[in-house]
Length: 161
Image (cartoon, rainbow, N blue to C red; front, top):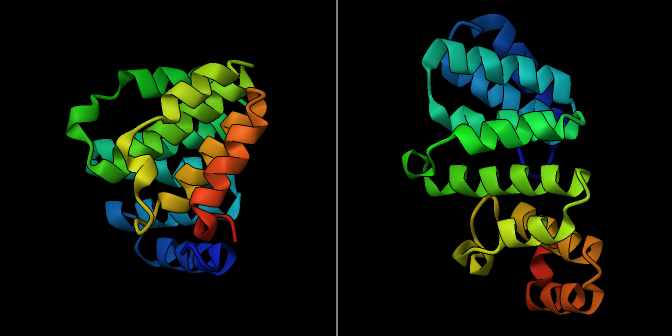
């Protein structure tokens, strides 16, 4: 999914058409659409997955869709309503990315940097590592910390290649 989001999205659409009443199918289709940049479609599938399966793990992705669609306050509302203790590590990271994106949209760039500061910033081998690193670098740049962003990028070159 990370290497070819467009292709993953096409597969997600097909499987959703064939087995759209399964939460896992709608979740995967939604995440694929999100990664491919089809935010309205992703939101529809992720909300369906939430209705069908009830998993709180959908909330970070729903918040990301809302932020990408320009609904920053809605994204923050969703992020604030989630009990992070009930999320896995991946879900917590995705929630931070969504909240930081929303903060940036609202011009709260320093808050976006603070939101992304976590021990997971030192992780390099998780599926979400590149997204977290890029979000943190972008937040640093937006807050005027260009040299700090450059230093961070040099620490994790594999995330920016």
